[in-house]
Image 1 (cartoon, rainbow, N blue to C red):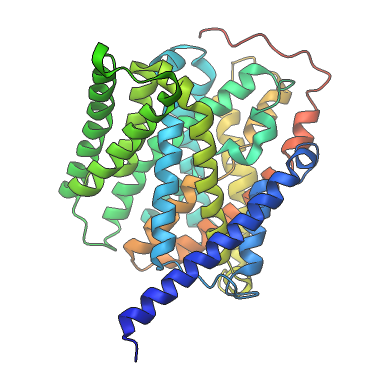
Image 2: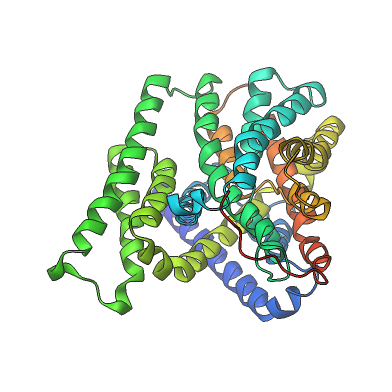
Amino acid sequence: MRSSRTVAVAGGNAMVATLTLVFAVLLLLAVLISERASRTILSTAVLFLLGGFALGAGMLGVLPVAPGDPVVGVLAQLALFSVLFTDGMKVGLSDLRSAWRLPGRALLLGLPLTLLITALLAHFVAGIPWLESFLLGAVLAPTDPVFAAAIVGRAEVPGRLRHLLNVESGLNDGLALPIVLVLVALGGGGDLELGLLAEEIVLGLVVGVLVPLIVIRLERLPFLKATKGLQPLVAVSIGLLVLAICLVSGANLFLAAFSAGITVATAGPGFRAEFEQFGELVSELLKLAAILVFGALITPTFLFGEIAWTGWIFAVLAIVVARPLALLVSFLGTGLPAKEQLSAMWFGPKGFASVVYGLLVLEAGGEYADEVFHLVALVIVLSILAHSSTDVLVAKQFERVTPNAPPTPG
């Protein structure tokens, strides 16, 4: 007779095998229809989200995953680590000095306002206590234009708009993370002390800065020079080393990933260029796998039986009011054309980082943790469906407009 541990291991292996098969099939389908999808409202993100939903426990039961399953936590952490590392590489100091005015307004004014407005909606519409309302606002504030790829990837879209969304999305995940961690700790759901949290955050920043600097300095020594073909693996090795050190030392691996990406982009811009395409593909694969699992967590009962009607009103308002109103205030006096303002205000999907931040809240526990996670999940689902289905339509509005020159400093 097999032991219970053997049965558990076999069940885990079967889940991983099934998840791998489903992911491979959906990935192949996404690749085969990608050319047509780039010209229509079809979306890769929506395909994986709906695929997970249809195959999850609430529908066909092919992927019966639960939030506490190890595969969910591990995959979400790896995906967010890669996303933050890749995002950090988009915003080296030279990028921050170039055309900083609009992204700076979106980040330094728009992000806090989005958080505040979302928190007000959560408290007065959904009836969530103030602390959890601000936590919900921090979780949902980051954006992710990967769900609006037609905007940031099309030449006909003005360069300053693409630059604005790219820089903003590259930084806001990392800026929101410390707020999320502190509010989770203050919520009292977990055993984490603020002193220990501060130590993890500081250690993560130190690891994220020092490791890339040391590796880049070593690589520049004449007898340690990497060959041209292996140059992309320098940044990969830095990311893996940062991840391993964080796992061993207990440093916050997400802040370490973000700061490591920024350090590589600043101290070794050549490595960023070599890593760019490879890193984006790896990050995209992990992100799509995590979206697939996230979709499998969402069931009809989850959406329509466990969320009150006030939660649905909150979710809609969080998408159509919170960010648009925050950026409307942020762009006052900038002279940015109305069409570009509206596009930036609309494309603020509650991105992939929000999925993992929501899982962190759920894992920490607390009286309102489950309700917060339900609202986070609902907003993300509606956001992916809305923003991923309208990116091509909005991009086409710029087709007759002469593309802007490259963004100018300031």
